Length: 180
Image 1 (spheres, helix red, strand yellow):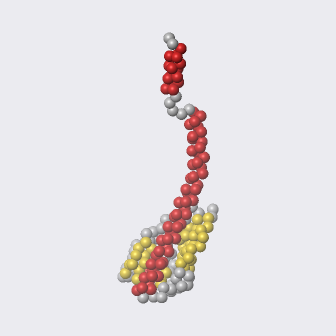
Image 2 (cartoon, rainbow, N blue to C red):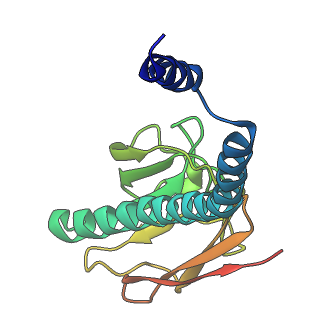
Image 3 (cartoon, rainbow, N blue to C red):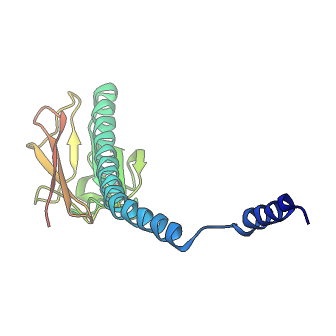
């Protein structure tokens, strides 16, 4: 047998016997994956929490802006209130769907008012606005008929944001705070 033939056979056997990963390579890859996961999961949770707060702020701001604009253009009173059944204003449960109606909604009854828009309910833990339970009414000049107020939006992840309605009907947002 020629000496080169055995070397060729050995080389061919050595190349074909290495398929897959070694145990060390697999453990290193799993370690890197575990380190990346422990870094990425909290960042992703914070990202989701910030987006939930931003979506809730946008829902309230959009409802208030629409009501203010409708009051000015229609030259009438427009009311924003939470309404779970779309027939009456809920007193203070601002996580319910928001209803924008033309008129005053006296006594909380909105069944005979023209509904301009209904905004879906919230995923927030709680939303509070003033302690009197009254809806927000914009007059024909775009000013709320009562004093200014602040929405406090508390989310499940321990964040709070404030949406402030001024005496002139303008809406501003105070920075998000995290509490534990």
